[in-house]
Length: 80
Image 1 (tube, rainbow, N blue to C red):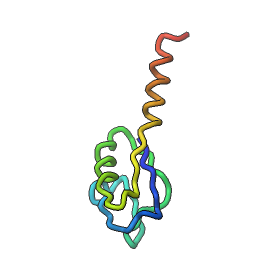
Image 2 (image 1 turned 120 degrees about the horizontal axis):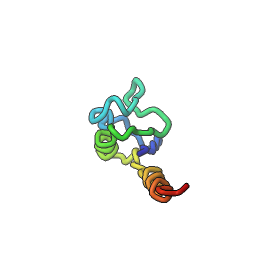
Image 3 (image 1 turned 120 degrees about the vertical axis):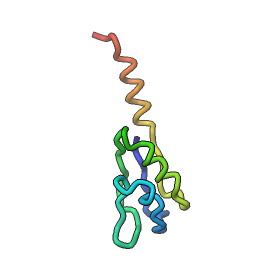
Image 4 (image 1 turned 180 degrees about the vertical axis):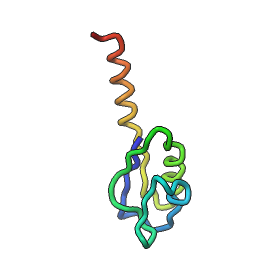
Protein backbone atom coordinates (compact mmCIF):
# COMPACT_ATOMS: atom_id res chain seq x y z
CA UNK A 1 0.00 0.00 0.00
CA UNK A 2 1.14 3.54 -0.66
CA UNK A 3 -0.01 6.86 0.75
CA UNK A 4 0.04 9.64 -1.84
CA UNK A 5 0.84 12.97 -0.21
CA UNK A 6 -0.55 16.26 -1.54
CA UNK A 7 1.50 18.82 0.38
CA UNK A 8 -0.47 21.73 -1.06
CA UNK A 9 -3.57 20.53 0.82
CA UNK A 10 -1.88 19.89 4.19
CA UNK A 11 -2.88 22.49 6.79
CA UNK A 12 -0.83 21.09 9.67
CA UNK A 13 -3.62 19.54 11.74
CA UNK A 14 -1.32 16.53 12.41
CA UNK A 15 -4.24 14.12 12.73
CA UNK A 16 -2.41 11.60 10.55
CA UNK A 17 0.56 11.69 12.91
CA UNK A 18 -1.73 11.33 15.93
CA UNK A 19 -3.03 8.06 14.46
CA UNK A 20 0.33 6.70 13.25
CA UNK A 21 3.40 8.67 14.39
CA UNK A 22 5.81 6.01 13.09
CA UNK A 23 4.40 6.30 9.56
CA UNK A 24 3.73 10.00 9.04
CA UNK A 25 6.70 12.36 9.36
CA UNK A 26 5.97 16.01 10.08
CA UNK A 27 8.13 19.11 10.02
CA UNK A 28 8.56 21.37 13.06
CA UNK A 29 5.37 23.25 12.17
CA UNK A 30 3.21 20.11 11.96
CA UNK A 31 3.04 19.81 8.16
CA UNK A 32 3.62 16.46 6.51
CA UNK A 33 6.97 16.06 4.79
CA UNK A 34 6.99 15.86 0.97
CA UNK A 35 6.99 12.50 -0.78
CA UNK A 36 4.69 9.52 -1.00
CA UNK A 37 4.86 6.89 1.73
CA UNK A 38 5.31 3.17 1.08
CA UNK A 39 3.56 1.31 3.87
CA UNK A 40 4.53 -2.14 5.08
CA UNK A 41 1.71 -4.67 5.28
CA UNK A 42 1.87 -4.77 9.09
CA UNK A 43 1.27 -0.99 9.25
CA UNK A 44 -1.57 -0.73 6.73
CA UNK A 45 -4.39 -0.41 9.26
CA UNK A 46 -2.75 2.46 11.14
CA UNK A 47 -1.67 4.17 7.91
CA UNK A 48 -5.18 3.90 6.54
CA UNK A 49 -6.65 5.39 9.71
CA UNK A 50 -4.14 8.22 9.60
CA UNK A 51 -4.83 9.02 5.96
CA UNK A 52 -8.61 8.93 6.45
CA UNK A 53 -8.36 11.22 9.49
CA UNK A 54 -7.03 14.13 7.40
CA UNK A 55 -9.79 16.78 7.22
CA UNK A 56 -8.12 18.39 4.18
CA UNK A 57 -7.90 15.10 2.23
CA UNK A 58 -4.17 15.67 1.71
CA UNK A 59 -3.50 11.92 1.91
CA UNK A 60 -4.77 9.39 -0.60
CA UNK A 61 -4.63 5.64 -0.09
CA UNK A 62 -3.31 3.81 -3.16
CA UNK A 63 -3.68 0.06 -3.18
CA UNK A 64 -3.34 -0.38 -6.95
CA UNK A 65 0.26 -1.57 -6.71
CA UNK A 66 -0.85 -4.31 -4.29
CA UNK A 67 -3.64 -5.39 -6.61
CA UNK A 68 -1.25 -5.48 -9.55
CA UNK A 69 1.27 -7.51 -7.55
CA UNK A 70 -1.46 -9.97 -6.50
CA UNK A 71 -2.56 -10.43 -10.13
CA UNK A 72 1.02 -11.04 -11.22
CA UNK A 73 1.51 -13.59 -8.46
CA UNK A 74 -1.70 -15.42 -9.36
CA UNK A 75 -0.83 -15.47 -13.05
CA UNK A 76 2.59 -17.00 -12.42
CA UNK A 77 1.47 -19.84 -10.17
CA UNK A 78 2.33 -23.11 -11.83
CA UNK A 79 4.19 -21.42 -14.72
CA UNK A 80 7.59 -22.90 -15.53
